[in-house]
Length: 636
Image (cartoon, rainbow, N blue to C red; front, side):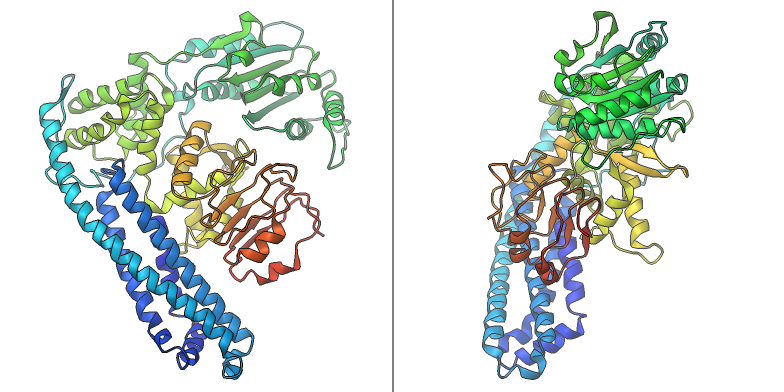
């Protein structure tokens, strides 16, 4: 929404302070008189963008489902991107001229440069026209908003939902009773906050601790949002000490690579191996070699292995030879698929069901009122609206947690909560209740967090995201900037912790100082982020290498994680003229030369784990490049 505007405004603020740019402008103004007015025009762009930003803040989350308003916001975003491109092109060309010695020889070599800056001025004129159109549309939309609010008030006055009379303010605006969160939230749902799981936890614990000598497979299944991972994680954390020889938690996910999974498993169990076990493998070990190495490491040892979020039977069947036949060992699988759950014997399958009304309300209160008192009791005046919100979650713990998170950050008054419920009510009429709650959670994010959140979709699904990498990438993109009291790194880490507090990201591992080491995005949350990223023209490719957006002239962030040059859609000859970011983790792509030659705005280049042995010399022409990642490549 406003994130693109804020980014463009930061560029506007920096270009006017650049002495080299100013010097070139003064020289060229003798040849192109209108160029002298360019700084004034750019300042005017800033004024107009700030005004549009204020209008969008007034819209806030109240009207974001209105298609007319969404269309206008898309136009503003496109305008902001255009402004940013022009400013970056202007800065690039001006400093390039200075480097070429143009300030001394401009009379002799001026024709080409005059042409370039004349084109930039044509872009400026086009932006001025775009601003006029957006302003005219804004006037019409504001009239529509007044009418929409009047219609909403009429509907609210006529509607009683159950025993709740939903109230509305005469001046309903975006920040409905927003209050600053007090303290930090628990991670997703902490062990003590989980409700309605005692029976299932006891059952899983019993299956883990039986005297069965052979390796036993246990599966936990159910639809997304039921808390399969949370349940198994509590059991795993409690029982792993009973498997001191070896225990490991492996996230599989929908897109997986068996070699990578086995390599992670080997790495984790080797940390727990006695010194006598020495298994060394090369960088390109295959399934057979890794299976042998794991078997050797686990020989005569009792182990506990969790395979989280398994989507295909083959993921297990191709791995299981590595840990089958171990005396007293246990393997636990979480899955949404019943064919995967059927891998386990009937007596070792657990099918989760939605929570009952009592458990649902208890879980909601533990999240929404965690700051009120140790008892987390719901105030009497909020009981009716809280019950209605919980009913809309249909017993799905993920939806209950997210709705509790949204409401916990608002003023806890009957009036404010009724307004929030009214905004959720229409969305909750559909079949995808979890998605409706998540949409509201996304729109409730402050503007500075939205790009940080969407950026996570560029990284591979299911792969833990290191804290340090996210922090560096966000800073390179300009999403977080230093403040008077904080460095850019500290601001970025604050953003990461706030996304975790809001459960938009989940902690995977912590270091010895209890700082977040790696985190991940829940699959359902990632689906939401991908949909929003596509709508807002992030232009990411999915992990299977299928383009989400084919309009490459508009793509600004592009991911080719897992791409192979054998893909039929491999874009070796495609030109990304507005590309800002390329994330190509573990990809073998033939696009690099094309990117370097055509993507003059490239700011971030992440090539981690890619089998490349050299970087084209033309990388030196990437004037805006602020980040390059070459970890675990073959570049020497």
